[in-house]
Image (cartoon, rainbow, N blue to C red; front, side, top):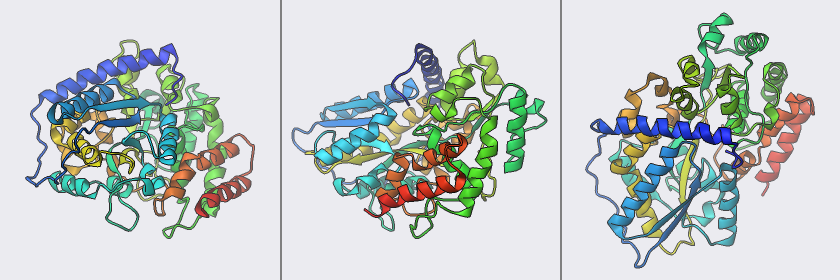
Length: 446
């Protein structure tokens, strides 16, 4: 999310914050049904004089930050360990993590995105004892949590996932129905035809083709995966320059002209802005867009007309949607590693985690199976689609192992820029795929 929000964006996020706070408060009043097994916690004697500094991505909805800070304050009350939590922009978190890793100084804990711990693995302490305890206590970790938390082909945990934001389709059902559909088609040809009809109806689709952490990477990944294309094969070989990728990019050449103008420059706020203004009728997004619409009287009619649906499968066997994951890591330079591990464990215990999950209305869907019974998932039916985000079987670097190289390709927007170059006629599909292959292989040779 860009730090350069307009006043209109700030107002929209403020409305969303109030709405989510209200919905979260209601959810927390219900008795918890989360079952926690009686499992002995790991021994983590906190270092004398310990203090902690933590960095994490800025909230997209205010209750995320408010409850997170309150939980951190509870840890301080319980342990006497001061915790300073800084929230930074989505783009800035990657840069500041790199600086912290390279300098060997800075925050003790950083919550980055998805595969970040795999990029900086040699600078991190293991979190296996905490992850094992939490997994046993809360019914096991979900697929994406294990995928991003553990080292490839090992049982050592280098990250502790806090949740993931899914990006299903968000659409105006009246406009889809006016185009002749009960729901968005699940096949490529049907999806393209719908987008053409929406454009003719002056309410086109819009998907990010800019360097957007969530939306840009999410759209590029869907385009490839739904055509059975992938960055890597199972052994980790770069396979992006394939006939499947060429087919995906040729499809994009037909699809892109149906989009609203300007999507190659979109960041993670842009589609929210366009959908809220009524300029587009189809996009993909996390839960925050719907709740901001629902709780603003001016946009409540749009919310009532809004539906969520999994992204089209195309040629895939399941809906090819990954979850943008919050993934915590503790750096070796921390003088208080036990305090840091104890803090993360505390934040994922149900007394703290469930109120946070409910308050952010599932924006960051849970990583541990036991939280599937949290109150947020039995409320608004339009939110339930986000419940199993971390059970999705697609990840950054799919189909290969998660590594520093695959993470760097994602962070460098190699796939997004490949797609954008074809959409804007700056490159042919063949040239764009070859360039993406060249760029990707640079990282895998290191």
